[in-house]
Amino acid sequence: MNETPEQVMQWFHTAVEKLSPVAAGSLSLRKSPCIRKNCPACAGGEGHSSHVLYGRRDGKRFSIYVPDEMVPAVRKAIANGRRVRELVAEAGVRYTEALKEKRRKESSL
Ligand SMILES: [Zn+2]
Image (cartoon, rainbow, N blue to C red; front, side):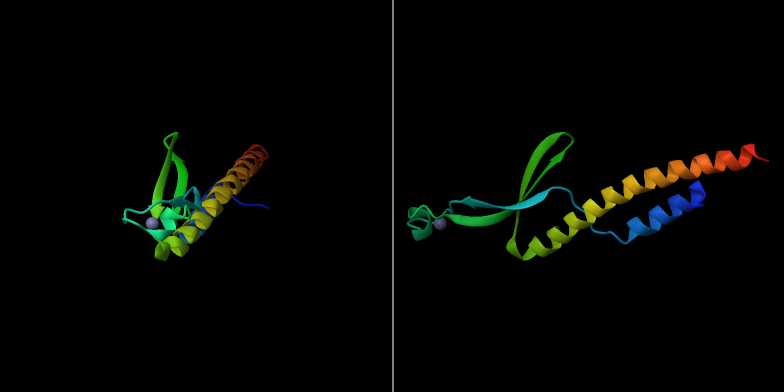
């Protein structure tokens, strides 16, 4: 692939722009008791499951409650976030290759 470092960054910005919104972490189901008195589900040890987004931020673990109706949106954001990380890795390789190609051309002038 013969591209300039500028072309690589242009490609990267265009590709990343389409990947919004983003999120990092993982969604899982957590079981917890509710606040109702005499709840049959809680009394039976069954409890209630709710979605939680787990992740790390500034080196610290976080977990936030995700209401059911927001699960699809958060899931999509996580998928976008994963894709952005892949794009950063790809951009790094292509950018470095482009820099080397640029140097080759300049030294052969
Ligand atoms: Zn309950």
